[in-house]
Image (cartoon, rainbow, N blue to C red):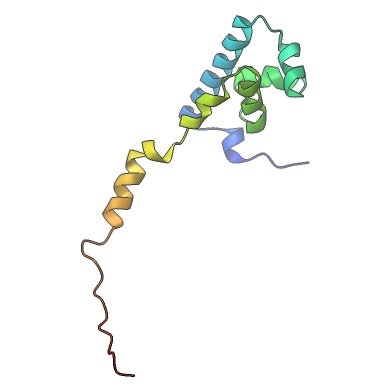
Length: 113
């Protein structure tokens, strides 16, 4: 039997909320398209039970299932902005703090062979 990770068993509040919002957004998009849970599940190639888990934001559901639902709903393009390195202000600040202040000294080479 596979072990369930700690983050799946008891996710931090922010993670649980993000999954719940994502699941709710997927459900709203499905309903707007007048698709049943079973129809969307069939498009993705998963069971309707997994589709229900996605919509509830269940943390043990594979990320591929969430992304598959977004793909089937035509919302995959929005994933491009998720964790975009150009939008990572903290990471950029840390990177620039590690940069050297001056250029390294060049070694003088002798032309005598």
